[in-house]
Structures are given as C-alpha cells and as structure tokens.
Image (tube, rainbow, N blue to C red; front, side):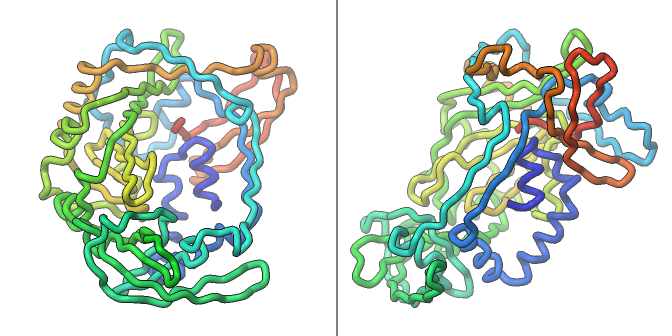
Amino acid sequence: MNNNDLLKAIGDIDDKYLIEENNVQETNRITSNKKVYIMKKLRYILAPICIIFVATIIVYKSGILTRNFDDENVDIPPKSDITVPEKDKWIIKEIESSEKNIGSTSETTVVPKWEEMAISQQFYEVEYKNNIYSSRETKILEDELFENIGDAVLTGRDTYNETVYSKNANLYSIKNISEECAIALQFEDDNDYYVYVNDFYKPETLGQFMNDLNLKNITSFGTISYKYLDELQDGSSEIVNVEFYDVNDDEIWQMLFNDENLENVYSDVDSWKYRSERFAFEIGISVDIPLLGYENISVSLTDKGYLITNILSTGKGFYIGEDKVKEFLEYISDNYDGYKIVMVSDKDDEETELKTDEEQQIVEYDRATNTVTNVTVNHTTDDENFTLPYNPMREE
C-alpha cells in the first residue's frame, strides 16, 4: 500500500492533493505494462500489509469546511447547482460499527505456499497480441467460450524456494466479449477454464465500452449510495450518506448509458478534474459482473457531470452532463426510499466517546506547502481551547 492508498483509506483525500503522486504512478505505468503487472505479483510476495488509522471527525466547524481561504491565490471552483432533496425524506438506518471502525487495526497477509494456490494464482499473467492479461481467479463455463485463439506458455515463481515453473495453456475467446477486454485459459492437464482480463483496455467511446464487454447483458447493479454535505442548525456540518436499494436496472441503463457517442475522457493523471468538489456530493452505484469475477465495484456520478467507473480495474470516464446527474438524483429520491446511514457503536457510550487525554491521529493539510501529513494529538474533550487543524478530507 502506498501513500496514496493510505490517504484514501483515512478519508479519501481530494485527488487534486494526490496529483503529484499520481503523475509518478502514471509514468511508471506507461513505461512498461509488464512492469506494472509484475508489481501485482507482489501481493503473493510481500507478507506484511499493515495499516493503522484512527477514527476521523465527521462534524466540523463550518469555517473549516468552506472554501473561504485566506490565500488569494487559491482557485475556488464554482459550486454545482444540483440541489439536495428534502432532508425529511430519509429513513434512519442504524448500522453497528465494530471496534475496527472506531479504533486502529492491523492486518497481516500471509503469502500462500505454491501448493496452496490455485493454478490461476500460480500462473497469474499471460501475454496475447501484445496485451498482458491478468487472472481474475475466476472459473468460466465451457458454454461461455467462443473459439480457440492459440496457446501460450505461462511462468510462475515459488517465492519460498525461488523456483520458477512454466505451464502450457490453450487460449479461448469468450462469447460476445472482445478479445481486447478478456480471454479464457485452460491449462494442460486441467479440465477447468479461467478468466484473464486486460486491465489496460481503454475504449474510445461509451458505446465501444458497452459493446466490447457486452456490458448490459453481464452486469447487474446493487446499492446506490449518495453522499452530500449537510449544514446543521448549530453552524457545523456533517457528511450524510444515503442509500437506495433495488433501483430498476433498466432505468439506470436508460438514464445514464443511453448516449453511446460519449468519448472516454478519463486520465489517471488528471483524475481530480472529474471528481466531485470537496464536500459536495457523489453518487456511487455498486456493480457486479459475475462472469468476469467482479463484485461490488463501482460506477460513480459526480457533481461535475461525469460518469466514472473502474470496470476492468483502470478508470474510464464519460461526460454525461450535470443535467443528467441531477435528473437521476431526482428520479431515485422521488421513486425509492432513501435510508440515511447512521453508525452506532457496539460498545457502551462511555467506552466509545473521546476521553481525557485520548490520543487521536488526524490529517493536516498545509496550504502553503501543499502537503498532507498525519498528526497525532493528545487532548481533553473538555478543553475549550482545543481546535482541530484544517482537514481537507471527505468521508468515503
């Protein structure tokens, strides 16, 4: 996990503050696709993955959250004219938060031994027509295959004894899915077929994206999450998360994917350009594609009018317009119950409240140097002079 991931885990720091690191990542990516995929193998090589983060504050003073910066050089983008639906429409839904949600956690991933891994884990990558495909660790039925498209020799490395293995495999195209997006493999002496995808597939238009993946026929939508900033009567603000369930898939396709001529404008380097403004709103739609082994990935709508998705791992973005986003928000809020998610502790209040001399780790943004750092503070909750430093993050 890199610094970018850490900041995202803490609270989804606005992407504009991560652009410098994104530039580095993009440079490394375009240098060699093979090198990027080699890095993927490190999840079987690197044992320790341990991140500690402490609960963030969701109620801030309005002066902290607004863009009334003293620095005259700060570029303040215009606010979206998309309005928040009536607050009294939401139904409160309480969800218990475990200790992991409240305090710090540590997690260690153990590298599996060679004989403990599935064959599609052992031989994780294959090259076909100058593209590198990575395993989804998902089996596919023979009935879903179209035709044999060749063969290949895959290599895998046992990290425990530093032994390199090789394996022959037959390659197959998948019915109604472009070979540019995904293929299937059958290894010698094995009866099963496995899905491998091209993570660097980049369509030119929304129509090409949908047709190459047969997207409408292999995709199902789940929970729709809507986050926005709510100004409270006492002058403070909170980020509200509202969820909608069982929204009609056909309506989503019709309202959001009907213009197949939209260009794919997404760039990893400039991804912050398409995201919602800090503390504005974003709509996230959960996506499942069982055929390709994807579960609970996302399609996002931002207040800038963009539809963004990470289907096939890398970003794709299409400008559908603010009017379309507004129309969709009004549709789901008018036709479906919205549940405001409220996190409640599974411990007694006395144990979960901030206590005297409690240590908290928060994120501080320095506008002068454009840097984000972790700050650990000790404070007393009764101390009227205690104030939090400026925090540029929003809850995900």
